[in-house]
Length: 514
Image (cartoon, rainbow, N blue to C red):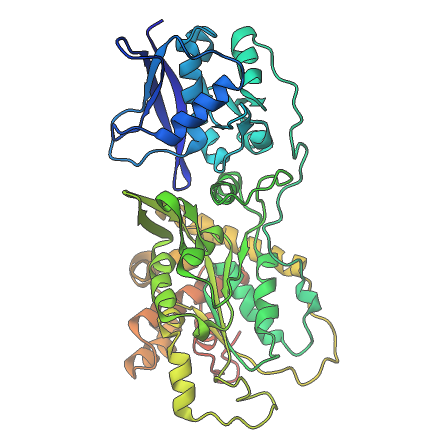
């Protein structure tokens, strides 16, 4: 046998890409292995792993000179996850098993120096790519077997060592290995397990704002002194959001897999994820990076969930301005190592900040010594993101903890789900899921145009410059969500006034809020 091909898969961002590995016997060379990457250059580290792993598994490579290569491209060399496909090509050329054994099979795994098959990150999107391409069988490291099994319709062959793999390829003997995480429950999403019912009395307005934010997918901003409950509210937002559907669950789980965070005990991520990076977080931690720009950061790990920035003005200017692009576009684009990758980042942004640097400007604390200029300078640090919030809350420390507890998250989540279903049905033909995604032009023109009598307060605010054109659209989106929560066909005057109050954080005339 002089030539052979095997199927590998590399991870590009959060997507698997199939690669055809070509192997051939080379005449006129001394026995050994040559591994060539997509740029035609030698891959000495992969060659050394293969030589050590194969020879330590007691196969003789001293008789046949072999060259294994990837198709030419401008992509950087793949990671170690292609080792098993390389090794299979080498072993086939050395007559260890027939090449027909690997027809319709994709191989994933790193080869250890002792011949073990070591786990790699990103197995879930790799197996998903194989399934989309029509492959029925994927061989993976045993440590990744549970993760791989989350992709339906694919036979997973789990191996611990190269010798186990060869027994399967030669005789069809499926290895009996322990699969970590078998029978695991769905991953909860990483957020705190808290309930709205635990909030102290006196926060009914904040509860209402949180409900509207959840129902419409609106970005939320909160200002208030220490102890006013900003973090408590943010932590409860995930409990109001519906479970992820199948496609979203696979996508979110694939991001955790690509980041190397998926544990053997984790199932599919069914709850919206939660990310709350500290204000000292570096840019790679926020956006991703690493070798070949291959790891997603916090904003992508919050995809389809909540991205909470506590003490937002304390984040670096570069971090806050850089976040504008993923917040607007719903994706992160990274370049490095000669490649550009894109990660999804459709997040529910929540900002929280003290009203001034000392945090005591309101709420009955010690008299604040900050000047108006100090406060303005402090809050201006986060203006680029604050402008992107639809709902804005100014909180104070609750005066008393006496009174009845509010509704539980489960009760409110039912209303949120019903409201989201109305919005999804309305916008499905345009490809939008929640009101926050709908362009302002859609809401201002055509069948969505609201009567002047219902939007007159909003028109007056725009006329006097109290709201910008962008703010006008954001208020319209919130008004549609308020209408959805009361199960109305379209917003009316009371809904628009309620949306104005939520956006400007200013009480409206009595009777305006229906």
